[in-house]
Image (cartoon, rainbow, N blue to C red; front, side, top):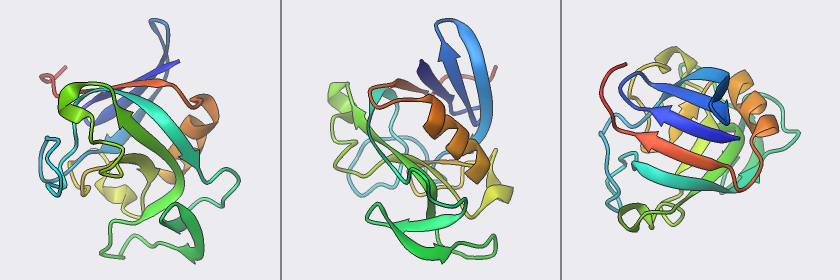
Length: 152
C-alpha cells in the first residue's frame, strides 16, 4: 500500500501498486506548503507513516499529545482538533526531514464541512469515518507522497 496526497485537488489516494483502493477528500494547510518550523504549512515530498495512534477510539474523539481526551469536537468548534485517528508522518527527503518533529499528521477533524479546501494548520485532515478506514488499511511504514502538483 502507498498513499498519495494531491494538494490542488485536496484528495488522498490509497493505492495498492497502481490500483486505486480508495480516494478520500482531505484538507491541507490554509497557510500553503512548506517545511519551515512554526510555519503551519503542509510539507511536500516523500514520507512514511512512522506511528499510528487512536486504534479503537470512538469517531470524533479529540486527542491531545496523541492521547484521547474523552471529549468530542463539534463542527462549530473554532479549534483545529486532532480527532479519531492519527497517522504520524516522518519525512524522507532532506527538505522535509523535520516533519516528525513538526508533528505533521494525517488525522480526523471536527471541521468536516471544510474538507476539500485548504483549511488546516499544517496537517492533512480527513473525515472521521474516512480516517478510521485509512488507519485500518495503511500499516506503519506505508509510503506517503504529498504532491504539490497541478490540477488533475
